Length: 155
Image 1 (cartoon, rainbow, N blue to C red):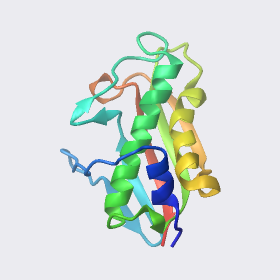
Image 2: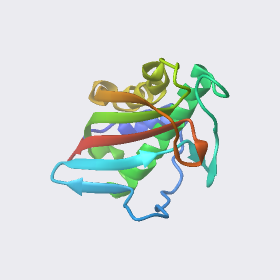
Image 3: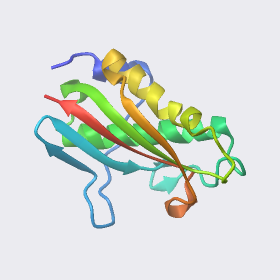
């Protein structure tokens, strides 16, 4: 066990809601061996998208970072559910994959994804440092600006 992840989350003032099951033909999390794969999460809370629009048009980099942070919170929600309610079982965040809904000339995808990456490091410390992809795309479901998926190593 890695005591302290749950404590760090509380110290950050983050209360994770109950995990919501996907409404499509996939699962939110899948464990294989010591790894948990978390499906792409969007910036939703309370069943509603909190951000919509394209980076470089309706959404600024700073708003994109907030949206990516909310995606990361939703990743933690699904991860905690997959681990029976205990993030202290996390050995480390292995990888984040981020998709940024942006106008063609937008080039700050890495800065946007820092909103998710910074939260993983804040919660898991050095174990939160991860490999990452930050990819621009022409659209995302419901016109959300960011979607992030993840892979974790767990006990």
